[in-house]
Amino acid sequence: MINYIKMVKTILLFIILIASFNCNTELESGTDFIPPAQNSVVIWGQKQIERVKKNFSAGEKKTTEYLKKIFSAANKMKDAEPDPQQFIIQKKNIGMKEVQRDRALAQAFAADYVFNGNKKSLESSRQFILAWASTYRTDRTETGYFTSVYQLVPFIWAYELIRYSLSKEDRYRIESFFRNVYQVAEANITGEFSDAHAYGNHWSYHVYTISAIGFLLNDEKIIKRAEEVYNEQIDWNLFPGGTPRNFYGHAPKGKEIIERFERCGVADKYFEKSTYDWINRDALGYHIISIERLLWAGWFAENSGRKWFSKKGKQGMMLADAFDLLIQFTNKTHKEFANTCIEGDEEKENESWVKQPGDVFRALASASLLHERFAKWENTTYGSHTQLLEITGK
Image (cartoon, rainbow, N blue to C red; front, side, top):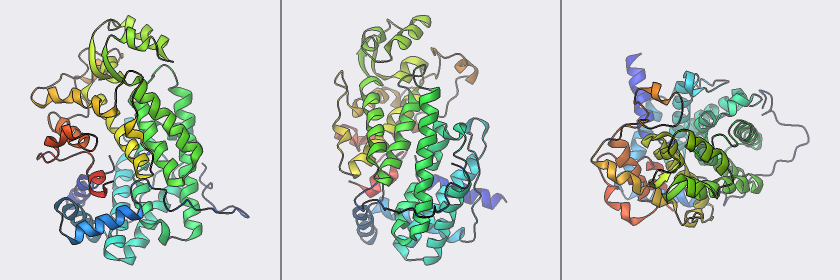
């Protein structure tokens, strides 16, 4: 058991993602299946696959290290079986270990098939993806909670690798599942988080999820919605400097924001290159989460020829600018939630998911994908939060 736990941890350490009814994946009689265009890419398009193959053959360090660990995991876990769950509830740690293990293995098996030609791994990856597509409930709004559906998105990386090796029926089931995930996620976030939690990290989670699904399905309606949320985050979640009262006075959801900031005494405080969560919760961790989810979503768009990274916010901020705030925390620690506006944050006893300074360096290394000024952090010993993006490249 101890060795098994160590193996699962090893898989999760090296495989990057950084979320219907049970019968809703059944093939409907008379339904015409129209596959997405082959130029529809989230992470693994044909160009990306060929680039990785070339780099692996040439012994390029990052690619070689990444794939060798994946191949090792696929080999050691070759007899593993999926353990799909009907729910993922992060706050209660329900389904978390299962989804993290299964999505990592689905990716490992898919890569082993694509880059090594192992047909047994093709079937294993297929079984892992279909198990979750057939089990996870999307007829319940709580299963669309933004931190829950986010956990399902990495199954897309596995699916993209093997998509054109699967049957029409398998593809219909899997793509129908992700369409239903989008629907429940959208219903959840627009219902519960429409105004009171304006522009925070939950919206970055959401754009990450729905942009991945939209580009997977090549669905212009979903992509349009994702771009709308992405643009809103660039406009109003990236704060250039000044006071929240002045900045959010022009925002569509500004009234609620200013009222909150007045209650907790930060409406007229000066901030620079912040995010909503930084002002609202005084949390370095949430700041990193928010901007990194946008980085991933923007990358999905770039892979499909959409230039989201060139977007400038209404006050001139670009996504790369939000990473600048992190530079000051490469040599000092931030006390999380010390000046939060959210009741209950103080109960976290100054704890959050962020590990300082490691996650700060990893985030800055990720930002090297956005601008050359972050290049000096690209090869730090801490690595990056976006290793998969670095390997697949543009």
